[in-house]
Length: 288
Image: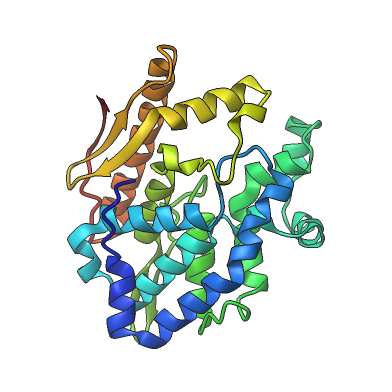
């Protein structure tokens, strides 16, 4: 992530909808402890705290660029809230986990992965748990209407796996204050989440990488540490890298390929499901 923050979405809310901006800032205070509870379930997992949410919001601003002006105020509010709430399912209480797990049909999943423990289930379905959490605690977050609750739930679910082409799941929602294009906003959020892969994703203040024992975790952390910054231009997403070891070159290129697939999908969703676009076309890797 670059150090130059623009805060385009937040600025629009503050200037044009101060009441919604206040609701966002109040919600951030409430959800901070819940987000950081993910350490209870995942002590060695990459950051899903408020720091990650802020990075994702920053990347949304960068991906949108001047198109922020083309969003309606409800869209700005829904996207900002979803940036903060999309991973809230990673930090739910055990009581909520038990209740939410009953609401998801996991029969086929358990047949495929009979040895999956609770933390594995949460990782694989955390976007769905996030949606259920937001729905249950919408009043706590002071979300002012059913249309906005639905939009924030769907955007948060949509940051991974869900079918953004589905017009029933991801409709254009008409509100008195303007449309909410849930497919487009979900595509932007999914891409922003995907590109939060830089070294600051694993801040030393939160993690001690020396305690990792699983090779997959060591490789993941090493790959993140090798990507010093992620730059978003109008046309490209650029990973500025300095591999910790030569073996990380291949892992970085694999990650870049995965990001390109997500970019291609999200660009196509934007084109087919909205009148707005994701302008970035390619993922580049540049050695520092």
